[in-house]
Length: 353
Ligand code: MN
Image (cartoon, rainbow, N blue to C red; front, side, top):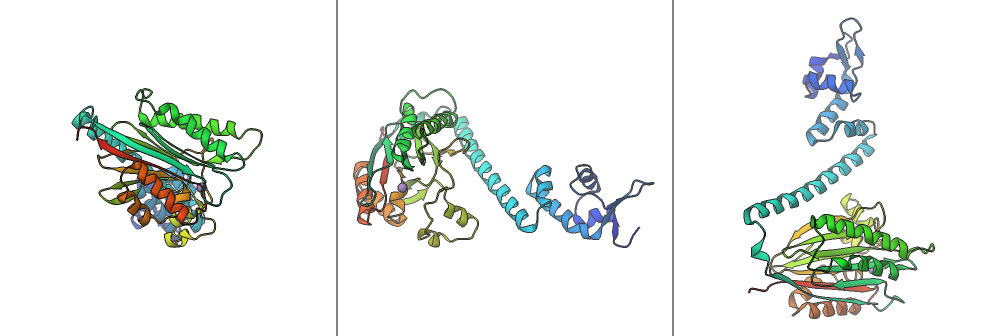
């Protein structure tokens, strides 16, 4: 044996992988021994392979599939770091979706059909305003007993794009929702909306839209979201944002390359990385509702002009949803009205109370 070589046993101890795992990784071409003795079949590893073996062991502990580990190991450190970050973001998104499902199942098993919440309903209001600078309003806002939606169109046919996206969801605003899991129903509807937007932009005109919508099931809200419009809930006096912006600056924040404070004034803060289009899946999830919740869906014309703390105060002090949307739009225009502004506000009311 050469002096910079280790037997499989010694190598296994040094990198905390079992000899059995090392043999598997050899077969999968994930980590090949430097040399296999042609007579005995013994595997020998080079000392300088330890670093890679430890990386493999760590990635296994993260739960990364072997095929993906092979890709990561082939990359230079910066690329590998990016891949690991992307993998972990996927794990967290998946876990969040499964947590929602688990919560739903627990509630379902403990309470059966949620009789306790059948008395909940929405009081709502929607309003859209051109603002003070833009020549036209390309936003669309909609509120009904089941559906709350805001779309912010862009491009020459932007107004048509946002209107047709919302129009394509309106069949959901009914007490007779199509059968099936509500998220699947919503996902299908969004596919329809995506096609409607494409049709609205036919003739080669560039157009697209964001879409943030909440579908009321009677006890919870199914959320669909793509772009930089937002949804919030005011609960017990505190404002929580329940959507993530699909913008360039949000990506930079997630990567730690920009602080949220810097993002507020970033020149490209409204540059979208995702909008409603074929092959770009929107965020979909369920949100549990409580009596007393006040939901806000709004376009970026509100959130770029009015800080969250002021949005909270206005939502908390407004009487009903109608007062709230008026006050919010007034605040955006009071701050210069730099963009079209749309607000939908809905209160979860206990009819029995
Ligand atoms: Mn906008």
